[in-house]
Image (tube, rainbow, N blue to C red; front, side):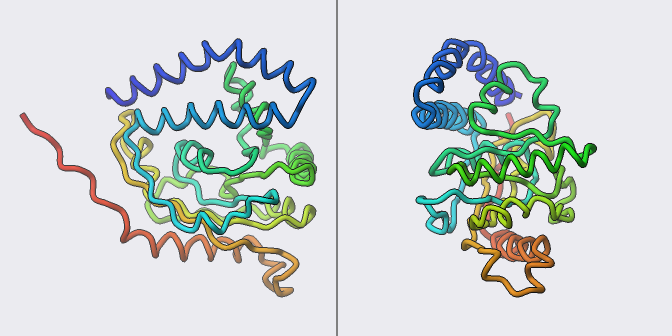
Amino acid sequence: MIRLILVATFVVLFLIFSIPLLIFEYFLGKFNQSAKDKSSLAIVNWAFRCVLFLSGVSVTVIGEENVPRDVPVLYIGNHRSYFDIVMTYVRVPRPTGYIAKIGMLKVPLLANWMKNLHCLFLDRKDIKQGMKTILTAVEKVKSGISICIFPEGSRSTEPDEFLPFHGGSFKIAEKSGCPIIPISINNAEQVWEAHLPKIKKTHVVIEYGRPIYIKDLSKDQKRRIDDTVLSVIKEMYFKNKELILPPPPAHHP
């Protein structure tokens, strides 16, 4: 429970003491949006790195060279944990907005930082609003902002199980022409979700696949783009299972 208390305390204190930074970022954006994007990215990256340190998470990263640094991309990943966002966000090379559940808007201060980072909020129960969110994401990409989405829609609770990908997520790449970067994340649920409420020291493996350009796919692959990308992620995921380090032995008095 000590790790949970440390992480929760840090997050609360960060949100409270970052209020002056939020005010500064607001006015900075009025004069220089690019500077605000870089500043917000740096601030939240620092906070997330602190969270990972306090959580005892170690990450092995494979294929990071596959992520283009000169163009925005659409990251597509499997979803096991809230820590998926923390672990992947600290590695983005440019401003990146995550598509989150609309309920996150209710969290004070956190929602402000998420908006600063170009995050978008999706109500999956409202199809019309969901399409507006996807179209907004397309415009974000066209303006140079990368987007990350976990198309399973919710976190899978069973080990090695993958929920079907929602096809609408891929419209972002289809309409913007940006590359899709598949991400496989192994063992993230062992940080927290597998043994709530404890946060445990955990080894996670993240692999970034090669860019997928929809225009280069066959007609069948385009039609089944959700399954095409999911198959790539599954291949990386099951290959990397053997890389997971065993948890440290429990200490008994």
